[in-house]
Image 1 (cartoon, rainbow, N blue to C red):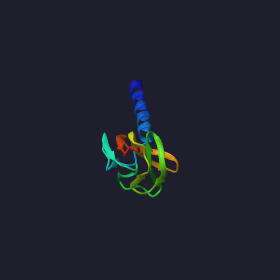
Image 2: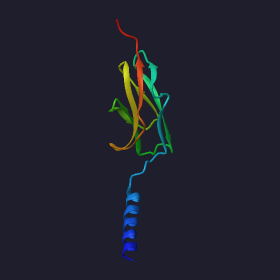
Image 3: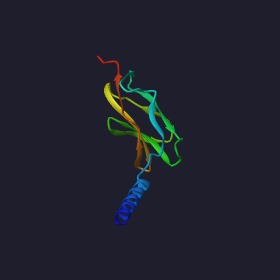
Image 4: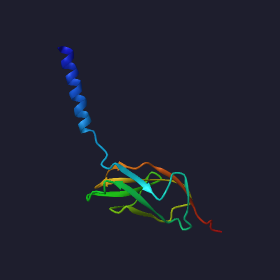
Length: 120
């Protein structure tokens, strides 16, 4: 009887922890129009990326890019995001879902190379 009570207490504690654990809000959150390891020709360093998100972005949520591990640009409610004057070379990019200024979810990070005309 004592071990049954002990098992029940453990089960209740684990169940409560599972219920209170944060769950991803979106089943799908990824960058589109850019693939991992891609060489991207952008002579002026400007290009756009799309965001695939399911279910659709909630009204109180915003998307923000993370370029080389740092927040990039303002948070937006659109799924087409623009990058301007990105230096040539290797970079990493991810997208975050924000509620106010709090990150609630982040996409996998992609690595890519920007190819620009070298100035003489």
